[in-house]
Amino acid sequence: MATAVGRRMTGWQQVLPLGAGASLPRWVADARLAQLAWSRLAEPEDLEARRFVGHRGPSAALERLASPAPVSAAECFEGESVERLRRGLARWASRWDQTDPERDLDRLHALGGRVVLPGDAEWPDGLALLDGDEPFALWVRGPLDLAAACERSIAVVGARAATAYGERIASQLGIGLGDAGATTISGAALGIDGAAHRGALASGGPTVAVLACGVDRAYPPSHAALLRALCEEGLVVSELPPGSSPMKRRFLQRNRLIAAAAGATVVVEAGWRSGALSTANRAQMIGKPIGAVPGPITSPSSEGCHRLLRREAVCITDASEALQLLKITRADPERPVPARPHDGLSDLAGRVLDAVPLLDPRSAQSIVGAAGLPLEEVRAGLEDLVMHGLVVPEGGGWRRAPLEEPPTGRGQ
Image (cartoon, rainbow, N blue to C red; front, side, top):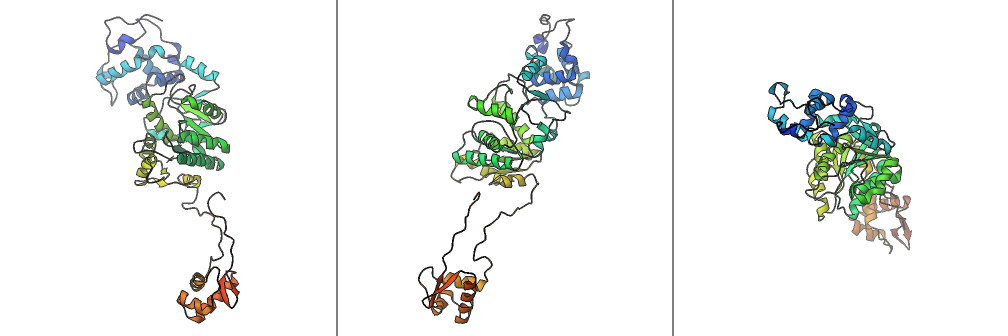
């Protein structure tokens, strides 16, 4: 490649690897490869880069970046200025020598991955809600269709420093969503994210991990086995090209993709300033429903969830309630409740039953005082209770019949 531009150049021109008359790499002219190049040149939060490319197209934008011509007001589109464009060109040019989308594609294909660009059939519809903040590209590993996986999906997110309670609930949500055929979307982080993915995998349900680094990176390292399983059975997705390192700002930007791709977001556990709250906040900003799992009021790990619940979040305690956020079930589905022997009793019979002892038989006259009813009504109530099998006569008196306590609690 030709030598760098001379000292007479200023700003971004100083770092351009192209000299006068040098030819551009062949990938500049290929629209798809040029789009991939921008995913390396610009950081996810760089909205100026998106506007720059959106106004000119990816190939023409690269050609302008590679040109040493001074920036003029005549070339600025709406929202651009000479100074801002000059600073942007300097940022993007600083990564020019690191950029080779053909190399990145080869690296991805060696891992069995693929790229998904705006307009491709696999591009998730929800990303359009980002309205100018969409990624340049998505680098994908895994057998599922990305768009199809996102159609009926819930983002399950929360704190890395999760409690045993939080991890158990996240796992149960992943299992329940998988059993219902819905997709669990999360970030493959420690704590809540990992538990949600594992739950989904255990149920055989679809799950998508959105990373804040390249899809070839196992981060966190302790989740290497989990990420391998996600690549084999689910999806691993990133807007960053292979080799990209995890950085704090990239995690926050990753959260916007989770919020937009999923149909709704559920925060399982989050402290007052947890980064997981940014996912819920972004989902709310773009009109997606949000839910939060309540925790002990004394737990700092649930302060963020309680904060959301005091605002507009829906209280979520299981997967069926999470699915309500997608408006694919009844607004208030009835849980099956075991029938109890005293169901359907009249008020009179119920009042008499409360006055009948459990063990020692009591005469009808004695029950009168306890029930606060006249003798005729007590006798009528006792007859009704005998018919229901709730009271038995014994030794000239009455006591309650022994009952088998029906099973209670969820999952029984």
